[in-house]
Amino acid sequence: MTSMKRKRAELLNACQSVFRCPLCRTAMAVSQYQSLICGHGHTFDISKQGYVNFLNKSVKTRYDRQLFEARHELFERREFFSPVQKEIAVIISRIQSPRKQAAVLDAGCGEGSHLDAVCRLLQPAFSVTGIGIDISKEGVLQAAKAFGDHNIFAVADVADTPFADSSFDVILSVLSPWNYKECSRLLRKGGTVIKAVPRRDYLKEVREFFFGDSPERNDTAESAAVRFQTGFQAFERKRLCYTKTLSQPDLELLVKMTPLTWKCSDESIQRFISRKAADITIDIDILIGTDPL
Image 1 (tube, one colour):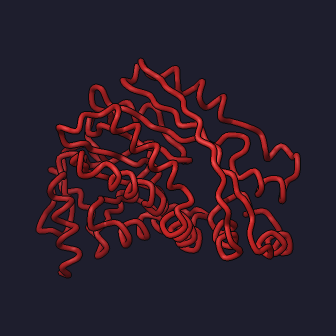
Image 2 (cartoon, helix red, strand yellow; image 1 turned 90 degrees about the vertical axis):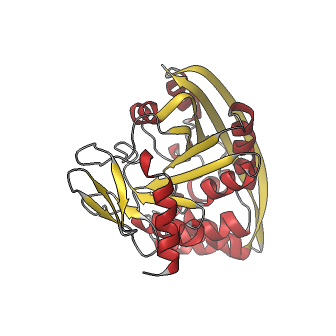
């Protein structure tokens, strides 16, 4: 066993109580730093990168390695989403008590940048355990490679997670699908869900270039906020809007990481990334719900 795998298995072992078997719903434990095993013998191996795959069949998505590598480069090295990550950390700092361990789940973590950044920003004032799940094995693999020394990652479905009831203080959903019923089950009393949803002007320069005024630009933020609000005793909504100037190499990363360009022609993509630089707008609503109904 490599030292990296053992270290990451030890991290899993330290918080094994949050896991439950996705097949029989019983408690799980780390066995010989190799696997998570439940009382009925269902076994889920720990990969050499330290993540666990809880899905019983492979899921095909268009979220491939190239997409997640581009996101990692744009998010980590270009700080494309840094203001969003900082705002989420501020919200958690305001709501949660720094005197206790805070368990944070990123449901739909992708390649892990948001979870890792938020957890780093909370420390050292907070003692944080960060766990990220995503249905994409490629995303989780990238996350584990980049951030697995301090966070736990798993391949899992956000609608049917491998966690025990009331396991988390905070659940994040950053521009990802989520499941209200499952979030409610997983939250501890006083727990908070923080969901980031795109507003109409999110990546508006990309939308205008490729789609003009087509229905692709419909704003779904308002309807998302209404649906979200009805599920919590306390609700807040914050808008965050800013512009980033991206260089030509950054524009290449942008078109690789966003599904907006999946149906666009190679010719139009080349025209978009041929510019020396372009201003790109990030416009989102941050929805904050505490104590599910």
